[in-house]
Length: 212
Picture 1 (cartoon, one colour):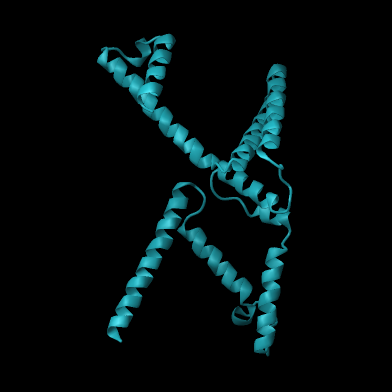
Picture 2: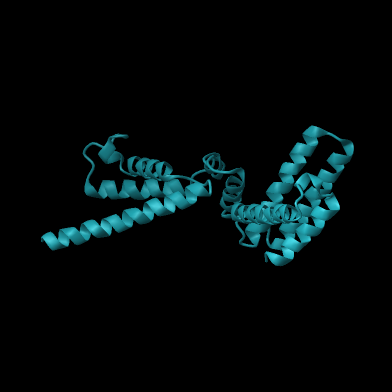
């Protein structure tokens, strides 16, 4: 009936809106965008329906053969080499990629047993960074700094904290507090350059108290 068709159309529109909205939200986080969603489902359709897209020798398959092939393909997807899956994580900010990689290897048991273990690893990496700084070796500093970031993300993951969202929150907080310092300087008819570091530190502490 016409009324039913209209309702179905509206419901499909609502569903599409949710897909677009969620994709946009993750796009703003740098994880993936709507095009990635479309590409992923297209690849899955082709991969799981070789009898339709003729990607394999699927002539004269019975319904039972198709069903068995479907289960076989799904099982192969689940048993794919973990290292190969890690190579597929290439989109989005490095923080997001690191967290996705850690979650993937955790599924096969390559993970810290608890947050304390992850934190001890972070402390270990920080000591190695300190040593690299002492030796003034730029290559080692870069390497150890990356290890520290990766370990810190691991700590966040064990605490169920999104490193990307936590950093975005801190960036917003820093901008707000720095704007407070600038406003205070303007009220004093001074520029930021005219403030001493000690004065800016004092205003920063005020911002922390007033902008909680």
